[in-house]
Image (cartoon, rainbow, N blue to C red; front, side, top):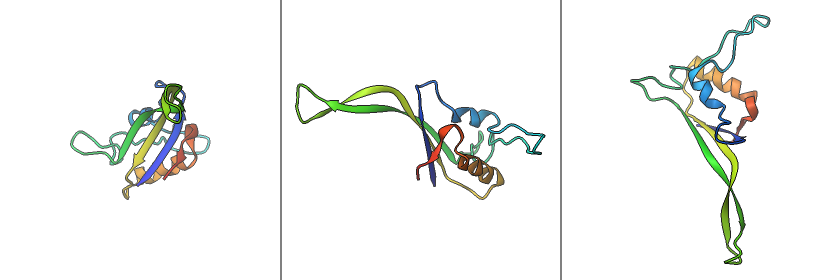
Length: 113
Protein backbone atom coordinates (compact mmCIF):
# COMPACT_ATOMS: atom_id res chain seq x y z
CA UNK A 1 0.00 0.00 0.00
CA UNK A 2 1.16 3.53 -0.79
CA UNK A 3 -0.35 6.82 0.39
CA UNK A 4 0.24 10.03 -1.56
CA UNK A 5 -0.98 13.47 -0.58
CA UNK A 6 -0.94 17.18 -1.28
CA UNK A 7 -2.36 20.33 0.26
CA UNK A 8 -5.25 21.64 -1.86
CA UNK A 9 -6.23 25.30 -1.75
CA UNK A 10 -9.97 24.75 -1.37
CA UNK A 11 -12.58 22.13 -2.16
CA UNK A 12 -12.46 22.90 -5.89
CA UNK A 13 -8.67 22.42 -6.06
CA UNK A 14 -8.96 18.68 -6.65
CA UNK A 15 -6.28 17.40 -9.03
CA UNK A 16 -6.37 13.61 -8.89
CA UNK A 17 -10.06 13.16 -9.73
CA UNK A 18 -9.26 14.20 -13.32
CA UNK A 19 -6.68 11.44 -13.51
CA UNK A 20 -9.42 8.87 -12.88
CA UNK A 21 -11.47 10.05 -15.88
CA UNK A 22 -8.92 11.21 -18.44
CA UNK A 23 -5.24 10.87 -19.25
CA UNK A 24 -2.95 11.84 -16.39
CA UNK A 25 -0.13 12.40 -18.88
CA UNK A 26 -0.65 13.62 -22.44
CA UNK A 27 1.26 12.18 -25.37
CA UNK A 28 4.52 13.91 -26.21
CA UNK A 29 5.60 13.26 -29.80
CA UNK A 30 8.87 15.10 -29.35
CA UNK A 31 10.02 12.59 -26.72
CA UNK A 32 8.01 9.71 -28.22
CA UNK A 33 5.96 9.32 -25.06
CA UNK A 34 2.50 7.80 -25.35
CA UNK A 35 -0.54 9.11 -23.51
CA UNK A 36 -0.87 7.54 -20.05
CA UNK A 37 -4.23 6.72 -18.48
CA UNK A 38 -5.58 4.62 -15.61
CA UNK A 39 -9.23 5.06 -16.64
CA UNK A 40 -11.14 1.75 -16.54
CA UNK A 41 -8.03 -0.22 -15.58
CA UNK A 42 -7.25 -2.53 -12.68
CA UNK A 43 -6.08 0.59 -10.81
CA UNK A 44 -9.40 2.47 -10.97
CA UNK A 45 -11.71 -0.48 -11.49
CA UNK A 46 -14.73 -0.91 -13.70
CA UNK A 47 -18.42 -1.58 -13.25
CA UNK A 48 -17.83 -5.21 -12.28
CA UNK A 49 -14.42 -4.72 -10.64
CA UNK A 50 -13.39 -2.85 -7.50
CA UNK A 51 -10.51 -0.43 -8.03
CA UNK A 52 -7.17 -0.41 -6.22
CA UNK A 53 -7.09 3.36 -5.67
CA UNK A 54 -8.99 5.42 -3.11
CA UNK A 55 -9.28 9.19 -3.46
CA UNK A 56 -10.30 11.44 -0.57
CA UNK A 57 -10.43 15.16 0.25
CA UNK A 58 -10.33 16.01 3.97
CA UNK A 59 -10.75 19.54 5.35
CA UNK A 60 -7.73 20.91 7.19
CA UNK A 61 -8.51 22.36 10.61
CA UNK A 62 -6.33 24.48 12.85
CA UNK A 63 -6.37 24.09 16.64
CA UNK A 64 -6.65 27.44 18.43
CA UNK A 65 -6.87 28.38 22.10
CA UNK A 66 -10.38 28.32 23.54
CA UNK A 67 -10.94 31.57 25.49
CA UNK A 68 -13.86 29.99 27.39
CA UNK A 69 -11.79 27.01 28.46
CA UNK A 70 -8.05 27.83 28.91
CA UNK A 71 -5.77 24.91 28.21
CA UNK A 72 -8.22 23.39 25.71
CA UNK A 73 -7.97 23.80 21.98
CA UNK A 74 -10.86 24.39 19.60
CA UNK A 75 -10.80 23.35 15.92
CA UNK A 76 -11.12 26.18 13.42
CA UNK A 77 -11.83 25.61 9.73
CA UNK A 78 -9.31 26.64 7.09
CA UNK A 79 -9.87 26.94 3.34
CA UNK A 80 -7.41 24.09 2.71
CA UNK A 81 -8.01 20.41 2.10
CA UNK A 82 -5.73 17.40 2.24
CA UNK A 83 -6.05 15.47 -1.02
CA UNK A 84 -5.09 11.83 -0.50
CA UNK A 85 -4.55 8.88 -2.81
CA UNK A 86 -4.31 5.43 -1.26
CA UNK A 87 -3.08 2.85 -3.75
CA UNK A 88 -2.96 -0.90 -3.40
CA UNK A 89 -0.48 -1.74 -6.19
CA UNK A 90 -0.89 -4.78 -8.38
CA UNK A 91 1.54 -6.17 -10.93
CA UNK A 92 -0.01 -4.38 -13.89
CA UNK A 93 1.93 -2.14 -16.24
CA UNK A 94 -0.70 0.62 -15.81
CA UNK A 95 -0.16 0.63 -12.05
CA UNK A 96 3.64 0.68 -12.39
CA UNK A 97 3.44 3.57 -14.88
CA UNK A 98 1.10 5.54 -12.62
CA UNK A 99 3.38 5.05 -9.60
CA UNK A 100 6.34 6.20 -11.73
CA UNK A 101 4.29 9.28 -12.62
CA UNK A 102 3.59 9.97 -8.94
CA UNK A 103 7.32 9.67 -8.21
CA UNK A 104 7.75 12.90 -10.22
CA UNK A 105 5.58 14.62 -7.54
CA UNK A 106 3.02 16.08 -9.98
CA UNK A 107 0.94 19.02 -8.71
CA UNK A 108 2.75 18.79 -5.36
CA UNK A 109 1.81 15.19 -4.52
CA UNK A 110 4.28 13.56 -2.15
CA UNK A 111 4.55 10.00 -0.95
CA UNK A 112 3.43 9.94 2.68
CA UNK A 113 3.59 6.23 3.35
